[in-house]
Image 1 (cartoon, rainbow, N blue to C red):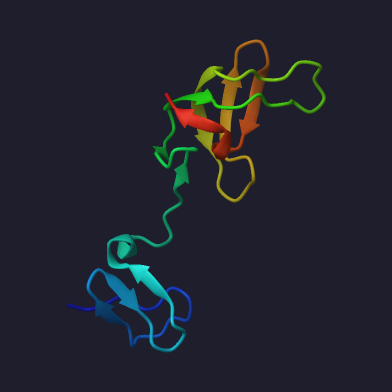
Image 2: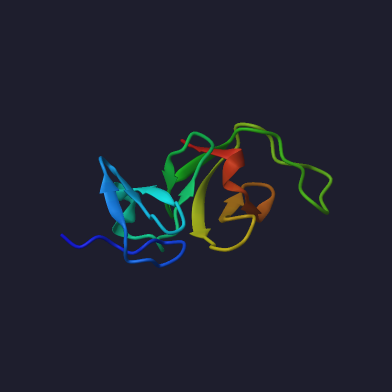
Length: 111
C-alpha cells in the first residue's frame, strides 16, 4: 500500500501509526481517513454538520445587515443557493423580506 505524501512539506517518508499518518521531516500528523481528498472544500455549520447546496438552514443568532435598517432574526429559515469558496461569507441565500445575502456558516445550523 502506497501512502500519500505529507500535505505540508510533500515529503515521501510518511509512516503510519494506528489511524494517523506522520511525517518525520516536519512532524505533521493527520488522520489517514481524511487523506482521501485533501483539496475538497467542505463547509460545516455551527454543530459540525456538512452543508451542501439545497440544504435548509436556520439562523442561530440575530445578524445585522450592513446598509439595512432591519436585520435577520434568530430562527429565520432559508435554503442554500450556492456555496462560495475562499470568502468569509460562504453561503449564498435568499431570505424572505430581505433578499439575497451571503452568510457565514458559523451562524447557521442545518434544519
